[in-house]
Length: 119
Image 1 (spheres, rainbow, N blue to C red):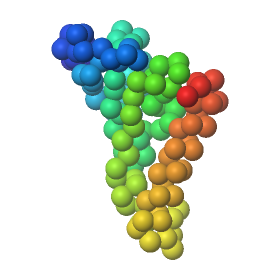
Image 2 (image 1 turned 90 degrees about the vertical axis):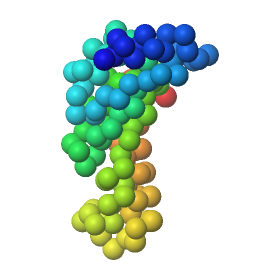
Image 3 (image 1 turned 135 degrees about the vertical axis):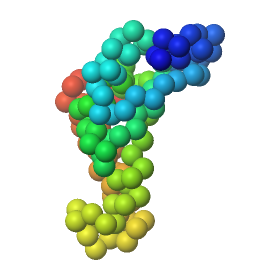
């Protein structure tokens, strides 16, 4: 499938080297992401599955290039339902969602930094 996506987007490469046509690679499949990124360095990747579905910051790393580019992480469920979590107990919906989003950002950026990825 990644080969097909690359083919569809080969004439649509933007100024930063990424195609306007991208793929979806789950955060729980880092081995597949690594193979796809290696073979298709200009493919933009949507990365669902971080958080509630079991994907981790470490697991999403293969989706990005050495500068931390080329992907966007989706984490809808863990953010939308954060107010139900013990971790955010006592917070209303908006405050819990904000805290969960900031925690996700911190987790990902700390993991990038630990691996020497500058963003």
